[in-house]
Amino acid sequence: MELPNPQPSGRTTVSRSEGIAEVLRDEILRGQYRAGERLPSERDLTIRFATSRGAVREALKKLEQLGIAAIQPGGARVVPVEQCTLDVLGPLLDLDDIPDAKLVDEVLHVLGILMDTAARAAVDKATDDDLAYADAIIAEMLSHDRSDERSYHAIRRLGLFFVDVSDHFVLRLIINGLRTTFLARLRERGIRPGLGNEDHRQIIVKLRTALAARDAAGVGRELRQLNRRFRDSARDALLSELTAKQRITA
Image (tube, rainbow, N blue to C red):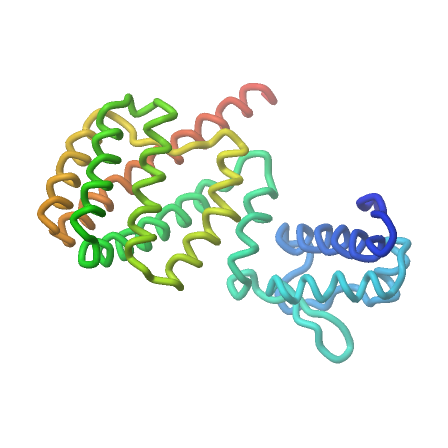
């Protein structure tokens, strides 16, 4: 089994343990080991990966921290993926060349719900200067074509504005976790959900009006509409990739 090259002094065990953990993690996520099933013993893993028992133990600890395995007397057992932490989302996305469309849609859906919550709180707490800043971002969104890179960044800035002004610490941590473990990976793969067809401008105008009126319910409603378009855009992009791949392999 090929593992990462040893690092400079003091890093060899860590590097090998991470490599072992990644291999076992992906095998679990692919269903090679079922929920409740015992993983191979430390001795067997030591032989398989041609490494020390200490590196194997450290790898199993990493799987336990991820929530994908539980270390018990007699060995480690696989935990149902539904009981894992958010950190498993990134590895799930990386399992295949084309990300699972249902997984992507579910994450974007949850992000939409969280953003709705952040926006409602932000509307109640925003100062007039805050609203003026948000209005400037929305104006920028309206001034660029939906396919423009600047439009994408403006949308992202508006979302960060809502999260910051909401002043909700736990909400911020969860959104940050989803962005770094999931959305960043989508961008690396060239998948950047957009706003779909031109009717998104009407939604943005309504969002601008609701924000100026401090209409929290209206802001939430329009953000949900935008989130629906982001999800549709991501689905279409993934379907296009899958179709292209099928043509190549046909």
